[in-house]
Image (cartoon, rainbow, N blue to C red; front, side, top):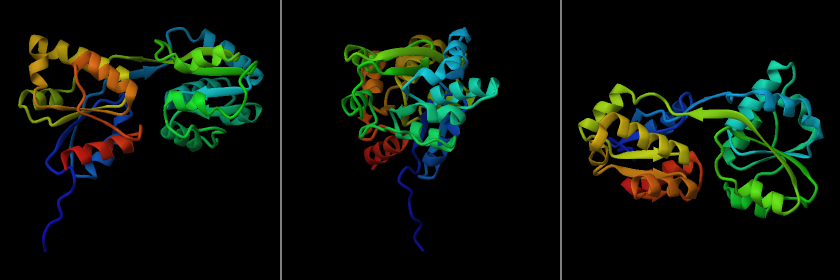
Length: 265
């Protein structure tokens, strides 16, 4: 009986997700035959100063909406609520919840909460364009990463008269180094592609490659394809690497998987 070849068989992939978040992505790529190398490009924890988050939590019931930009916003807001003897589920009937992405909605659902609004396309532009109510005078909380990021949603809502409160719920920092197995794979020129799931993983990966390989870091990437999960990540690829080889049509990890399979097939 002829052996069926899997779509990514003999393809070596580097995944750059946050430390502790690689395993799920790794599994879906291994199931398609890929060999996966870890390059954790983020370490995530509470922000340096947790007091503003505590202040917001004490007033959480005053908000009309909470907009979560990522599952980490959910995780660390809920974690702090649990520290204080509450939970996001317990107080979620006091406000409505919007999420940008499908995976963020799924993470919320795993905590026993259904999002009140998920935009049709999983990007910031879609969220504000299709927001299901008039935003003027709405009290909106946006838990986000300490170091900031794309302000498109906040700026748009403020222009339309919303009362927006953003708070640092977590911080993502760059790890110290690249795992040895992945370093050796780069040195032996066996890596076929690097997958990026956010702009910050792009920037931190570029930093770590430069730190590890010095002036040789760009030559290390000769022949290595760079795949992006969406438009903002693609922009960072262009800024840091001068190129991107494929962008996912659907801005999720499943979309990134499909883009990778299409490219190599």
